Every structure is written in C-alpha cells, then in structure tokens.
Image (cartoon, rainbow, N blue to C red; front, top):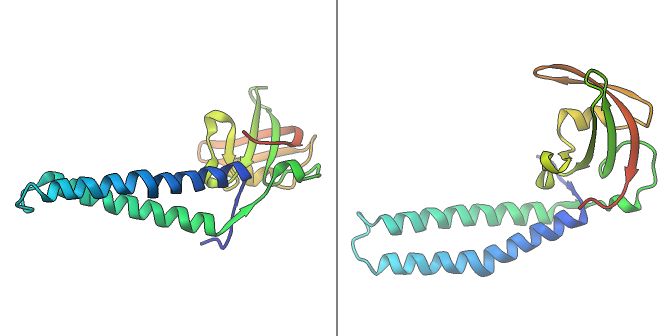
Length: 161
C-alpha cells in the first residue's frame, strides 16, 4: 500500500464533496430505509431490510475508502510545476509511431483517471513509460497486446479539468 496518493486539487475537492454527500444525504436516507424496513416485521423474509443493510455496508466501505484517500492525499497542483520532463500532472502530447495518430494524456491520480477525457492514472503502463521523458523522446510501451512506440511531442503543466 502506498503511504501517499498523488492527486490534483480538483480531485481532492471532488473526494471531499463525495464524502460530504455520503454523510449528509446517502447515509441518512439509508438509515431511514432500514427503519422503514424494520417496521414491516419479520426480518428473516424481509428483502427490503436485507437490501438496506447491504447498502449500509457498501456506504460504510465507501466512507472508509474516501477518508483513507483524503487523509493520505499528496495534492500536487500542475500549474505550479516548472519542468520539461514528464511527471505527475503533466499534459503530454504524443504521436503513435505506427498509426501517426496524435493523442493527449494528462497524468493524474488513480481516483481521477478517465481515459475518455484524456486523463490516465500515473500507475498505467503508458504513464510509467513516459515518466522522465521530454519532448522529442521516443518511448516504447510494453502492453499485453504488444509493444507500442510513441514520440513525445509536447510536455505541459497546466490546470487539469
């Protein structure tokens, strides 16, 4: 287990909002659902009660997860980084040497990755291969479906939406 979890300020804000919503909206609703189900009587055959208790366990697990991640957050603001090398928070423009396709990835924490939005986790094979590279460098990424050769076209540090 990692001691610290790198994330952008936007991710920390989102995790805090998720935790607040869970505590102030979802958990009270779940408590109400349990009370309503209890009022229906026999718990052995009370599907509503069992579903509500299952939901309670899920909410508690999510709460613990969020508190753990927030408590060990290493917040890194990409706009404050002045570097030409790829590291956490970099927005990297790449060219696939086989297809000549250009792609742009922002290297973010695990909690904020979304490939469809061009955000990849710092833990992915592509991100790992890019670390420390600069514009003009070639990178070979080892993937299950074979090696992929990329060229780093541009490295920027800017706000990641």
